[in-house]
Structures are given as C-alpha cells and as structure tokens.
Amino acid sequence: MTVYRALDDETRRVVLDELAARDGQTLFEICSVLATRHGLGLTRQAISQHLGVLEAAGLVVTEKRGRSKYHYFNPEPLAEIARRWPLGEKEQ
Amino acid sequence: MTVYRALDDETRRVVLDELAARDGQTLFEICSVLATRHGLGLTRQAISQHLGVLEAAGLVVTEKRGRSKYHYFNPEPLAEIARRWPLGEKEQ
DNA sequence: ACTATATGCAAGTAACCACTTGCCTATCAA
DNA sequence: TTGATAGGCAAGTGGTTACTTGCATATAGT
Image 1 (cartoon, each protein chain N blue to C red):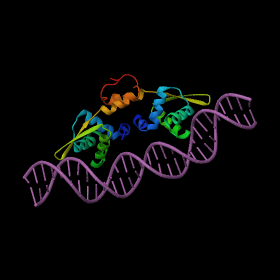
Image 2 (cartoon, rainbow over the protein chains, first blue to last red):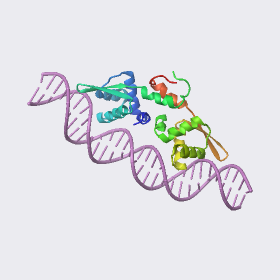
Image 3 (cartoon, rainbow over the protein chains, first blue to last red):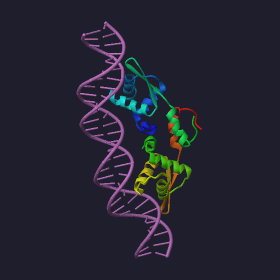
Image 4 (cartoon, chains in turn purple, cyan, blue, yellow):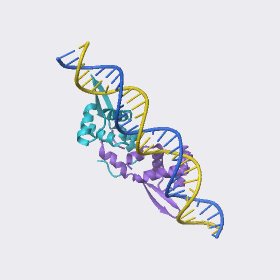
C-alpha cells in the first residue's frame, strides 16, 4: 500500500487533518467528528477500513489499550514525496 | 482530478521522474524512455492517457508546436501536500 | 453472569481505473 | 498528392476500490 494511494481519498485526507489537529482519537471519536464537523455519513466499518488503509501506508500508527484503539498521525511517509521531486514554490 | 490520484500510479510517477530529469519531451520520446530504461511495455495510447491525467492534475503542462506536443513537469501542485500537513523529517 | 461498549472479519455490490484495440485527424517531406 | 510521422478519440474488458450488511470477538461495568 503506497502513501499515494492512501492519500487518494477525501475521507482519508480529512481523517489525517483531524488526527493532525488532535492526536490519539479512537474509531468512535473519529466517526462522530466526521459526521458532525464534515457531514460525512459513513458507517463505522467504512471509516475503520479507511483507518486500515492509512495504517498500512504508515500514515497512522495505533495503540490498543483495553477495548479502545487510539490513532496517531505519522507524517514521516509524506517526506517521500518531498524527497522524490522538488516541491513547487517554498514550503512554509 | 486531484494531485493525489495522479500520483497514485507508478507509471505516472516514473513519467514525472523523467520529465523532471529532462523537460520538454514528446509523447514518443517518453514512450521510448519508459520502454528502454524502465522495461514498461505500454502502448502509446496508454501513456498518452497517463499524460492526460498528469496534465489534468496540473503536474504536467504542454505546448504544441507543429505535429509534436512537448511536456513539461510542473512541481507547484506538489506544494499543496506540504501546505496541508507537516512533512515528516526535514526536506532537502 | 449479563449487558453494553469498542472493534474486527467477511461477503456482496456498484462504480471506477488502467489498458487495449481500432479508427481518425493533422503536420511535414518527397 | 502520396506517404510517413505525431497524436487524438472512443468503446470494451478485467481488475480494483469504497461502501454496506451481517455476524463475531473482546473488554468493562453492574
């Protein structure tokens, strides 16, 4: 699973946005955030599958404690893009 | 067509590599480079479609002179990724 | 033990994507 | 004009993806 494929979905990009803003959310927390703040009426299983794709790409790492699974944004794989091509303009 | 979708294909990524290395190549030149240097036995039409995807994403700009069409790598859309999330590690 | 909570697994479906094949248009040289 | 070169358009196909539905597992509270 490549980073590029993982990023090729708006729902997954929004999930990354939310994890970057507040790290360590559970699946249910992400579900409610997507529903309330983004109007995305997806089922829990759909979002779980998206998280699996992000995890397989290394963009999300997880930690399981008790019956909950906490998700953390890992930006490192994004550096692959910057390494492969020059980025247009300047980064902030 | 998003930048992310355009990047989600190894053939298109190789095309970007080649254009970044030598700008202004024609479709036929790109075909022969992919075949000889990368062992990609795709038809001309397939590669033409890939170039269309890259152009729709803004990653490639073209210029038509005579019966030839010249392709140029445009890195600017890649900056969108750097703007949206922090890149892991440091960029070179 | 029983119930609710938090998540996982698997099959089915509709839409999408990469690639091919076949034909067509346009430019240049003789 | 004839022929060769450079590229475009469109339909069809096989494989993949996003999403749903249904059921199962594991943990926590009472």
